[in-house]
Length: 450
Ligand code: PA5
Image 1 (cartoon, rainbow, N blue to C red):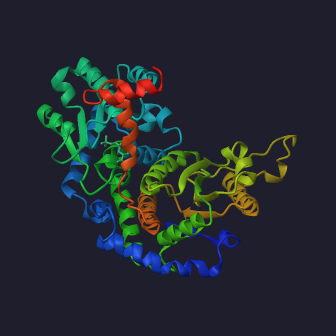
Image 2 (spheres, rainbow, N blue to C red):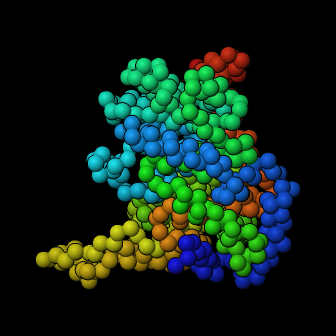
Image 3 (cartoon, rainbow, N blue to C red):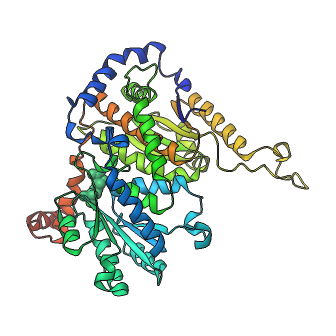
């Protein structure tokens, strides 16, 4: 089977046959904006060629650092937020045993990779410190700016613990900073302390950075094969170059999303039938939401995990407000395929399924859901992937990245900026009393009667 295939056959009720071809001119124009750099945000397109034009020397250093961490640490704490953590988090879940984090060290063989600095929960930090306990650990702090509040606070906490355990010099040998090549607070601090540093390239925005050191170091530490990840992405990069909608499955996905959006389907649910793809949806939500949600328009990206959420969100999807579209990432070959066991009695009424593969049952559930939701007025698209391995994931990452870029241009926005994420920060700094933000703080306090 192909690494990935896109299935829009369930859209017949929602999209006329002529509509896709009628999008071709717009898609071709969007492709030119992307490839020639004539579209908005052109300085942030370096992810396009990353799968082949990455820094090979740094890639080798990432592997070396991963080996060192595997040898001297039971835990790697990855500190970052948004684009500085979601890619690694989703990849590690996707590529490993469902209970990878709970496995005994002898079974897991590689360090536990845990994440911090992606919230301001004090309890989470305290719980993570307790979990690490006396175990040997290292820290990979990831921040382009080096001044993002959440990771900066978490980094102070774990740096303090490292220094208490290993002394200042010992701690410095266990801190890996992934940040700007030249500028920024973290780069300055890393150079002063002698931490090994890796680069977040200038031309790659956070949500497109999983195939840089941002994602690659934690993923390599987890024991996954980052060569295969890049090889899969390179295959996708070579596959999705021709804008012809009859052959380009990534552009076809972008075009159908746009057709549906214009018809009022303003929320897209990314769905899966494998629990270890829950974080894939979180990564995709940032990619889609930060790329497209601007100028008071854009598809709202949401997600659902099936069959779990059929028992919670299923009612809404079937019969609620008709502004939903669904994109399913469906796995064809699961890592394991257990049969439904035989039992002495048939009180649960499952005799008819005895001996059938559980994955076959899962697939029938998927088919039943597509039919039911289609009948209920929800357009469903499916991205079929062959396997949960590194090559497939690299391919899938690139597929979604290029689709979102085209989708953004089709909707007339800059897919590569994120001006809106600053608004809450200004208010928060005001309320926290950060120097320079006092007036905003006073105004806000008055407004909320604090
Ligand atoms: O995509 C983005 O730009 C954001 O999600 C950032 O990655 C996130 O805000 C973290 O920023 P920084 O890497 O500067 O700490």
